[in-house]
Image (cartoon, rainbow, N blue to C red; front, side):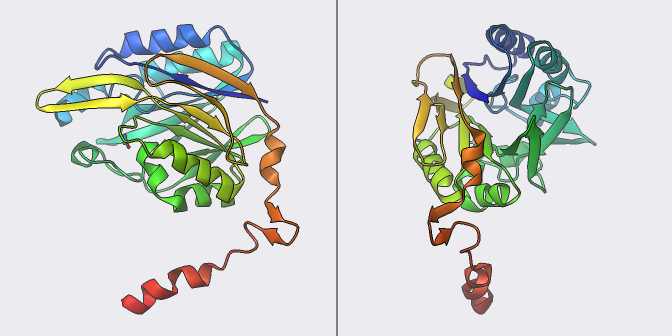
Amino acid sequence: MRIGFLQLRPRFGAVQENVRKAAAMLDRISDATIVLPELFNAGYLFRNKEELSSLAETIPGGFTVSEMLRLAKRRRLNLVFGMAQRHKGRFYNSAVHVSSKGRIEVYQKAHLFDREKLFFTRGSSFKVVSAGDAKLGLLICYDWVFPEVSRALALGGAQILCHPSNLVLPYAQDAMRTRCIENRVFAITANRIGSEHRGAASLTFTGGSQIVNPMGEVLASASDRSESLRVVEIDVGEANNKNFTPNNHLFKDRVPSLYTALVRKRR
Ligand code: ACM
């Protein structure tokens, strides 16, 4: 199967412009699973909840999902992208999967980073979704810090970790290679580039989007400066072999009772 990332430089608040630019870049390809950055449609640095409210959309029904769904069906793409979601009076930093068949699935970010805690509600479950015969595990940016997330997704059957990101620190790319080795899965980290200066707050995003295989090898990567679309061919079945050595199985060797014993003792 073909998997890839679209690294972008969104303009804050310009939802229609951002979505149309991404759609035009993706309109050149077909028959692939592609990951886009976190909050790719709206930008990242909301000044306050009112501003977030003006940019958040319902899923389904909003402009972004409608456009991406049309594109996914037309080009036979499975798309995973980040966006601000309005749901029952709350706001979520969400990753959406729209399938080539028209299915829509949503993961709401469980580990909120820094000022995201001021505006967003954290999600309460993880999600593994189907893209054709492949299983995708959804996580968003700062979720990478918690190895439990990748492990839970892999134990839940994920073969490819799909990781929309707005990374501002330099650690995630190396960490995701480790996540791939320890779970024997593929990972697609789709980061953004550019800077946002909003009021007193300012951030520069670090690019370096990448596709990693179950051996931790980087199959494709992007720079920290340019928008780019990269697609590679993989055998997703490689993620089904969890044997580290002939005598070691990454999942069967686990001893979960040991992992919580010290925590229980300290209580
Ligand atoms: C992040 O979670 N956007 C760093």
